[in-house]
Length: 299
Image (cartoon, rainbow, N blue to C red; front, side):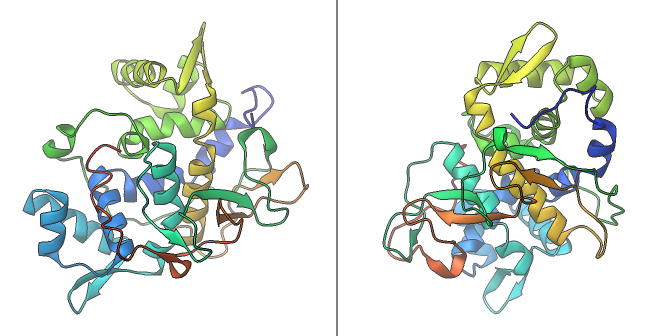
């Protein structure tokens, strides 16, 4: 694991410098994730989104307004389309779907194979694994002026209870617990201190993560299971997107060293079939009848 003990790592500095909380303010609701997924496939109108997602009209309007204010999408001739920042969320959405065990074919890669996303080190092209990463010096705490994050709607709380990456990303506390785990924060008391979270909320989130075999409890500590470790590329993708699109220009991000090759980690989304880089321009969803409500359905 890349995690370090809280004694050997300046956890407070790394937590303060993390961009992940800011990213979750953008994406920390299932509806936002579902909207991004839908718009990755095509320019879509308000009415099409309303029909495809089954989302209350007022909630959809609020989510679209928020994503637009965050620079993730923009108005288009027939509705909405993703901005460059929105397109750059492909690794986050595709890795979330893959971790959730969603076997539906969402895209085909230019190589002709079904697209299975793999996050690799751009230097050595090895898959990024939690055990191969070491945190370098912490960056600067982000000084961001972002719109106030939206609260989850009642409709989101009533979605199916199946536990996938949408459940993690769609609940800010759960995602932050996962992110802190990769910084080495494993004790209940340390999690409570770093998160400033109510004890009953923290206990409920930890219990659910243990029930879903993402974490396992060992006395006062919570360790990642093998399934939990597989979330690491998703956290890396969240961090990379936040550093590229939310941090002010010139502000130094937290850096990670890729131990197998010795370089500072530069993540790259690739096709698991051919190993080549993957972007929306190399992916084809045409003719596959792809549903745009994977996150809404609790995948």
